[in-house]
Image 1 (tube, rainbow, N blue to C red):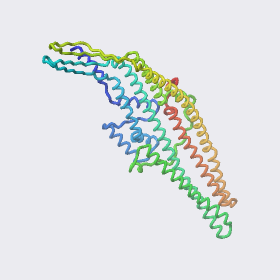
Image 2 (image 1 turned 180 degrees about the vertical axis):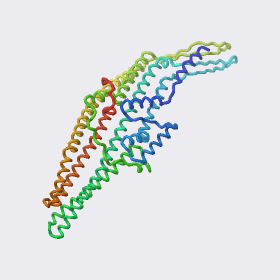
Image 3 (image 1 turned 90 degrees about the vertical axis):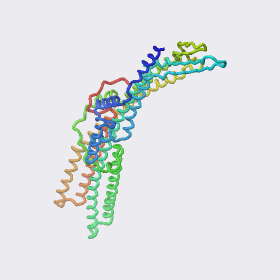
Image 4 (image 1 turned 135 degrees about the vertical axis):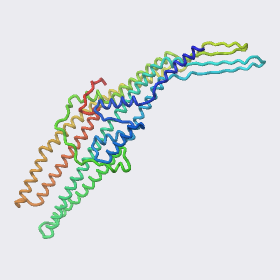
Length: 457
């Protein structure tokens, strides 16, 4: 009897694992850092959290850069905070998988009808199959936790790309408002001049109507540009998790970042994506968890449910009798064939989805790589060819106007052409930075980070 209690004590020691998700979060932080991602922080109520909150407060009270906005979002976005809790759930599942079921204690008392000693019986039993399958259950839970880590890391990189896109789009929207104000000023001057000319009989009513129409359209264009800026600002607030005074205190520059002289080498960007996309890593880990679960199901089919224990009884003569106890499940109706077929179908399904995701990633990366190349070349063409041509055209028009060889409306048209060309250039630069953020998301991290070795999908 004493040796049996030592057995239960030893088995209970398997439940001493920690449920703290901090090691898992540190692993996620490492996965993100390996891919050139930002440093992440999980508010756990420590003194360090106060410093992080102070940093965020300083950021939202000033001018936000894309990197600064990402810092804020990684702490304040409640959707990401909720995703972090998946690590706690996964860690708890891992600990649970390493625990044995509690032993079953039984007691039975029988009273003699004609006097004598009361018959008492006590027993304690443990599920033998539960002990045997414990290592397999832990391997399944470990693979599931690995998948959770990869999904959380993927969520971090996804939010990073979304914030970068949103901030760049807001910067471009603000710059567009400034451009539309310039166009409105030019159209206002043209409309006013036409009205003066009509007053002295130099132009027709049709000329006045046309210029006034252009002016009114410019006001509408400015209003739409301002409305898009407001909407885009709220999109940034949503991603950053800001509301109240914090949502109104920050600002961004209207000037977009300059294009790099040369993009990083994108020759092996497909291999880069396959080797480090965390959502693909998560699918792989989920497949491994299902394969481990299939092994566990196979073992449970071979070994029926078996409970082993010890019982002690005092018989009617007062003698205590102690001995082993055994109970076995008879697999008459449920032999586990349905469970086995189901898990095998899930394994095949996971493999197919992994292959599909790898194909989709390759196609997406190729398309974005081509789009990035076109955007970069287009922006450079605007900057080095079209914008200088418009500038020269405006200067030449000014010279001709000064020499009274050109009318004022032709000069105003040259100015409008220059402004519209700059607007097109601005749109192209915006598209470049948005596409670059998309490509970094699709390739699993920064384009400047070293690619891990490619793995077969």
